[in-house]
Image (cartoon, rainbow, N blue to C red; front, side, top):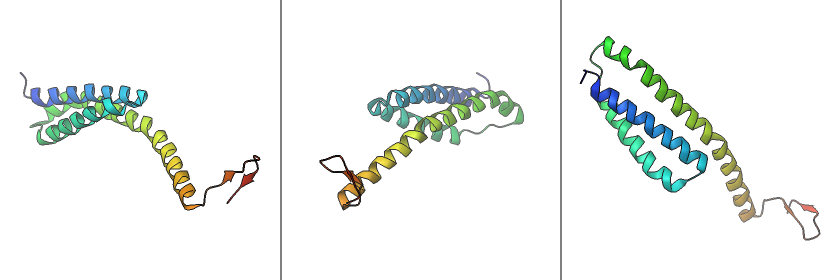
Length: 113
């Protein structure tokens, strides 16, 4: 195994984990997402504890690190619109609970309450 072995292995596992995360996000599968996120946290913690000892090792891992960064950004971009939509829904529910929500009357007319 090369000097970058443990770090390379961890990054490769992280890439696989990010792919699984993306699939769970697309499927909106919260059950599948939970263990993936736990694994991702463990891998990130493990990765932060590993240190590349020289420039050559970092250069060898640059491509893998760039791939992991790209996948993580893709997952964030996948999640962001869903979070915004959920925030709007929650605010509507809170407004309805406080009597501030705009609603339609039984006749279909708009009422701001």
